[in-house]
Length: 161
Image 1 (cartoon, rainbow, N blue to C red):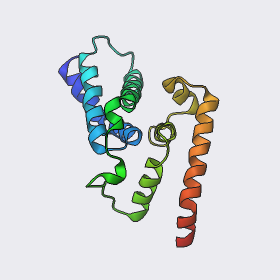
Image 2 (tube, rainbow, N blue to C red):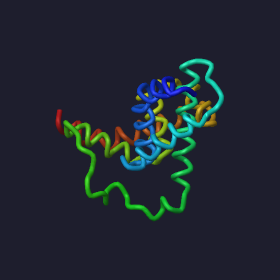
Image 3 (cartoon, helix red, strand yellow):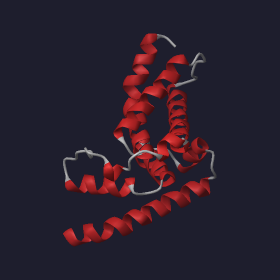
Image 4 (cartoon, rainbow, N blue to C red):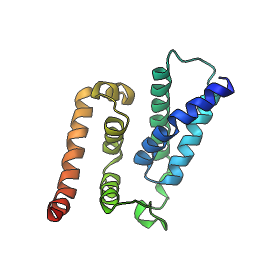
């Protein structure tokens, strides 16, 4: 891959990869590492891409696979939880922080489908293909994630109205 194409890919897709990695891994540091690793793999990739959409999907697939590998590693089990981090992420509004904390409290499989569906605008079929699961599994995960978020956030947000 030539330098100009690579630079353009980084500029266009780094935020997407960071968001997916952050939602999957839970920490900004791990998300930064994921972004670096994904783009390193892209830089080393010798085959071409059929279209910009093919590149985007390849990056999403590599990010998901990398994050899964990180979550399975023994090193990960000895790490601090998000609650024990000295510097939590900073948000402009309380509602954003509350939503972030609620999403991060969900299991990884729910966080991943939420990110791909809402932030990356992928369809259920596309998510199923990307994660190598059935469409019904994606639909179920989205439904369960929404219910958990509604249960957790509904009481607080209803009190404010």
